[in-house]
Length: 207
Image 1 (cartoon, rainbow, N blue to C red):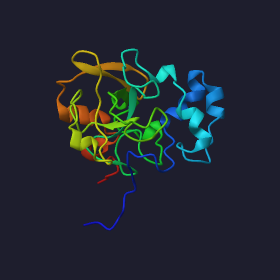
Image 2 (image 1 turned 90 degrees about the horizontal axis):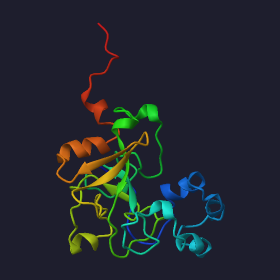
Image 3 (image 1 turned 60 degrees about the horizontal axis):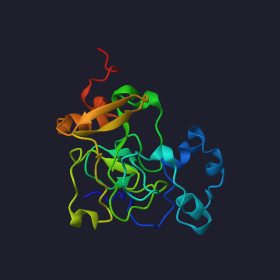
Image 4 (image 1 turned 120 degrees about the vertical axis):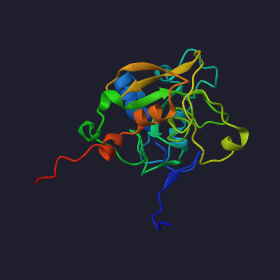
């Protein structure tokens, strides 16, 4: 076993947990809300209560019947079932960022965001937990078991209230509808930001 500890995020209101959605606020006509965030404190701090209790329409699907402060969309953090951590292979992983030129398949072939169904007791649209992050370890529209949801390390997958699948946003901004019957390894490869680099021969070899 490895002695390296990969810090992971659990689905409880403890920790810093500021997420990708708060960073997007200035770009979705919510500059005032963005400027009122106390970035020196946890997203669950009293100083950020106004943020947590604000419903941001752009993060909501009209068909979402969960509480108004839940997000209808999630960033993809990993291609397999895994806690949210720094060693994840999706585009939105813990405490790091990547440049578009580092994405082996290209941004147009890699999934950034997707629709999600909210689970009970989610921590809201601004929490960097399973509330706004999901993985490709589960078929689209699969419903988790109660014992899975009680595991605070469990993240879950994409889902929607549309028949037969869910919409995803690629890294270049293109929106695509994925069928819930999509080949699972194909779906996972679309989430993994660097899968081509593991299978393509390197061009540095010389004779």
